[in-house]
Image (cartoon, rainbow, N blue to C red):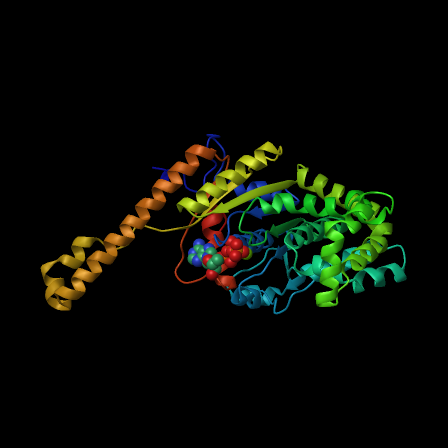
Length: 388
Ligand SMILES: Nc1ncnc2c1ncn2[C@@H]1O[C@H](COP(=O)(O)OP(=O)(O)OP(=O)(O)O)[C@@H](O)[C@H]1O
Ligand SMILES: [Mg+2]
């Protein structure tokens, strides 16, 4: 039974309740990672709200927030820099921010962030235009897998370098695999570095041989069928970005350094169900391998014990009042809820045993969705129990 460990630092004996709040108050960056659909975006917003309430200047970078959550934070459109969530909006949701506390939020715009990065790195206006207009660039910056992950950390790096916030909370994209987030930046910067480019650019080397072999034939065929000259687009793309590669590589190094910094903490969010738990375990192991031990584990949407006892709906007086049929159905709903709660309790026990997180927070599945400031504050009440 892990219920008595709920929301406490685990394994450290005398660590205080609300150890996650303490950790965050001493950190610069908080990366919220985890399997798809478990509540990463909601938890990120809730953490940011609570840390702002406690008096910090906090920015949260959300990715694909649910519509209602986005509008609750005033994020009607994608945006490329954080906007202040007005105190009166927070007050309406019952949250009074302490002096000095500010909540800033944005919904990441991957294409816009990529364009900004190119603008910062390009040596002159002409090469910038050439890149932005290039078909290959448009594909890479918009749709290619990894662009969202890459731009998320690029934005994180930019905000952290500007130094305007006490804490930046970074939500991570809805990948099929939570590890993608860790791999994508390196994958993309490898693509931008010299190797890929040499293949296409060096006439005497592999590039020419490829052009004259299978790839060349395929490209030629594509051009005839679609009218798109991919090969020359590709060559033009690499030529255009050639002046930016050093900047790009340096940026990638800066990002890696930031993620490895002591001021950066990684939180993993999961639910207590089997598949997310397995993925959370992979992610934690991978973080540890990379020398980034898990700072805290948040088990979200844990299904609670039903508040009503089975026998109370089966009582004679109740059956007479509501009828046998309804009483049966209520009893079986209570049974289902109890089974679900038991499953989640077992899942929670298993992941706690296996990961032995230094800090653990357990958040129940709240009624309805968590889509407004009041809901985020309720969630914060479970994430940081001693502070509300
Ligand atoms: N503790 C909770 N109780 C009730 N509903 C919750 C809770 N946490 C999250 N939700 C709801 O679950 C849904 C998914 O949450 P969210 O979008 O934060 O997940 P995510 O991990 O960011 O998903 P994705 O991987 O798609 O980005 C939302 O509708 C949210 O309101
Ligand atoms: Mg999300």
